[in-house]
Length: 127
Image (cartoon, rainbow, N blue to C red):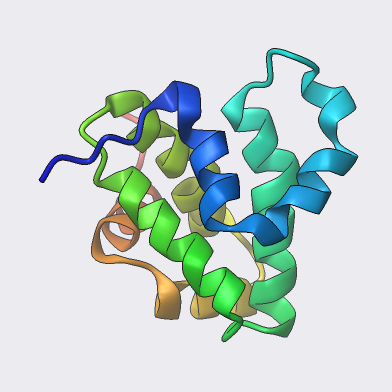
């Protein structure tokens, strides 16, 4: 079975799978108007929600579903969907200074998300 998640509908799919994000999404609609960028939506909706839950309620069913969705993104056959998950989530957690956030995130991450986060933590520029 192929993963049909595509970049142009990833936010619609996200909001369908995690309807608890809809109110924060609606509060920020002025940021993306009719042509929202998934990166902006992740930055203003998904990451702040994850940050709050990772610090205060890491066993939340909502957070678990978000991480499941991120893993589906990482497994997408579409590079742009994988890159969105890698840049917005795996990279954010890789550089996160709060050990509580990273520790709790690792407990919930899928295999591909964890692999990408570790790759980013170990990345060094070519010298």
